[in-house]
Image (cartoon, one colour):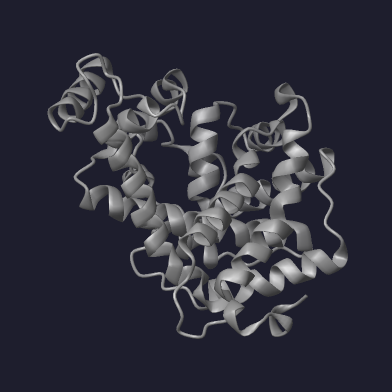
Length: 290
């Protein structure tokens, strides 16, 4: 099944997108992209560029599409990192220019996917790319800094890695939209991270280690959420906090409905199913190897 074979509801016909389908494809996109931050191949490729510290390597890989921007620009785009965490990337462009970081990221992605046995048939790979292409071509990139930067990166020749990069654009588009929703809801960089960890969706130890908010900043953010009634006095999420978090996710999906409109509800669901083998392959390997 290719784009031209989809029923009318799967193409842009002015009808509303099913938000459940938007949520499902967004989760599939995130899952298919996520391995790059944990795969040993990323650390190996970064080491080849002379950077062995995982934090600066992560920041360089993810922001390379923007070019050799100062760390302050990366901080603005990443939102929930503390300034001290992002400041650590100073010097990564001296180790290697952004184009080399981007090429190394593609190498890491391809190596990792083949190591764990990601397999999409040629037909399924072509179909997935035929679905994501009009989504990205029709996307509104205003205010979507990381998505726009990734959309500007020439696609690699390897079709599987090219699909992964197209998935990356869609993933960053939702992330950029999410930041707008967080700001609209008055959730600052540390506040949104504290709320996320309180839901159990992000281990607190990992969040503290990677985002590097200090005890005073973390406590102040917690106090602000307690004052809003979203956390109790022990820092445990309340029913109101859970509802607020769910509302923020729904609002983000509402923003993303326009992104997937070119292929409609059926196309979005089909794309989610086509890329599922990427995340499934990584889930199937021992966790210490991912």
